[in-house]
Length: 291
Image (tube, rainbow, N blue to C red; front, side, top):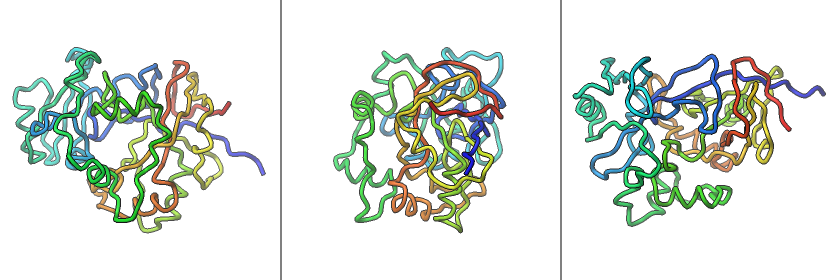
C-alpha cells in the first residue's frame, strides 16, 4: 500500500487570542511561530488576568485582522469585528468599552508585552479548588480523568502554573500547532452528527493528504522532525483539548459530544504542539515530510 503524500492545506494566524483568525496563503515560520500570531489578548478586569475563550466564550464570536502600516509597539493595531457586526480598532479610545459590552463583562485589550513584564502575564486570584477549575476548563464529566500533563516539558509546565501564558507570548503553550485532516476524519467517525469545522480546533497548519487517510496521523510524529516547505519543526507533544472545542461560534452549535469522543478515544488530545527548529517559508501546497 502506497504511503499518503502530505501537504500544507491551510495556514492560520490569530491576531487576537481566542478570536477568529486570518487564513494566509504563505508565511515564514520563525522561532516564535507564525509572525504576529496571537499578538493581542484580552484581560479579565475582575481577576486582572489574561484570558481566552476557555473563560469568555464570546471571544469566539469576534474576529480580528491586522491594520497594515499601524504600530502598537511589538505588533500592529487590529480591527475587531464584534458579534453584532460592528467593528472597533485597537487604537480607538472606546475599544475596551465596546469589547466589555459585547462580552458582557469588564475586559481590556492588550498588545504583547515584554517577557520581563511578569505581572502582566501572571495568573491572579487563582481558585481555591484548582482541580474543580481544571475539570471545568477541560469540560469533563464526573468520573472522567484530567488530561495527562506529564508530556509537557517541565520548564513550560512550571511557567504555566504561575502565568496565564508563556512569558512574552499569548500562546497556550507552544508557538505552533499542526492538525491533520486524517485526524479530523477519524474524529468524525466517532462523532458522525458533529460539525467538525477547523474553527473548533484553531490550528496554525492544517495538513492534507492525497489518500483520504483516517487515523490520528500526527500522534506518530511526536519526537520527530517535520519539514514544511523550507521550514523544519520539532513535534514535541500531543495537544490536550479543552472546552473551546465544544463551544458555539457563528453557525456552529455547542456540541459536548466532541469532548466525550476525545475523552473516550484520543486521551482528549488532537493535533501536535511544535517548536520551530529551522526558520523558513511555508506556502499552501508545500510538501510535508518526516525525518
